[in-house]
Length: 551
Image (cartoon, rainbow, N blue to C red; front, side, top):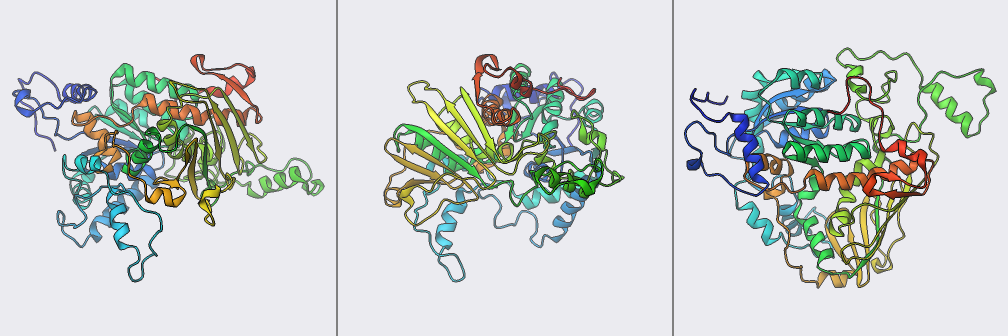
């Protein structure tokens, strides 16, 4: 618990946290002796609330347990209580006393240390055979960033959270009630289904609270622009949860592209195997059969109707779930266990399919390294799509104009098993079907599968000297703590909402083309307007259910 401030203090705790965050924009660190009596130093703890605690919400919250977790909100109390109990169980199982974990203070959640360690471990008895590809060593910039302060002792922070914070933790189902009642919140993690990211983040920022919003940031193009504008206007520290942006090896990949290692890049291919093996797509919404089921044909339409009828049923909403709060801003749909707690990602009302899920990771790097901006044309082709549940597989073609001395680029996205052809430089190897990025340049090609860079062919890669390290590194590759340290004024935010919003807009334009019937769209980015298909503009935004709009 924080010590009480003396009554004659001149600046409140909230005012200080806010001013420290503003100072971080200019990377100004305020030493304690400058602050004066009654001020709190930037090293003091941030009061964090989390909305959505299943899946990535739990990962993000665990990553900031060095701070004060003061509230957790989830529309499903069974998930909330289950997560707290899981953390209690993990803490109780820890055999190593807090502070003595041999892994503490290392590379955090990132890969920098793992690359070097993995290279040494490869080929040991029982281990994997050594890879013929040379891994780049952890960069000097990353080592210097790590040296700025120790990494987190994740065991100790979990123990502290379980022992000291859970007993006084406030729990909510409705984020609106939490924001209205609890005045000690400085910052909010938002890791709900995609459709509620923007309403919750907007409500929090309207109150001057810093936000960490899970990818894909939001549900619509309009929301992406709204959040970026609001974050700038409210001067809050706002970060999207695309944690791979903080990795050393992907920054090395960006440096390779920007140094001209493969020349001018005019073609990029990005792919993922999702949703296969992760969540269902291409299925009909459960529904009672219309008419006589025996008269249905065994054609595509008939099979879909039979599947919808087979899944239909009178399912009761679980006692600890508020289905109304799950729906939030989206249209009213009857509860079905097919939708919650994870499969929502495949449904148009709530998610953005594989493109929204993995695009925020994989498309980040070409968008970043090539400074792509926004496309002029977009077309998504897909397996059958009925407008309610995303199709099993898609391919999206983007065209980006020439910009700032860089050539025009054609970028193609693939998911659900669709992939680009194997480059001949791989020889007998094959592209990893799980996901990756292939850059085609005037002087060669480069792979990321999914993140570490590989110049093609292997002989060129293994003999290539790493380029000059131009990009700052995130201490311990810890994405969430970069957000916390930026709030405190200790560090610069590594990816603000302006950049995140552009990336997400690119992704969501692919969804717009899909929903517009696989139409090829011409896009006027300056005016957020599709110029060749007026009807498609409706998919750039959405109608909000009363009580769940943007602030």
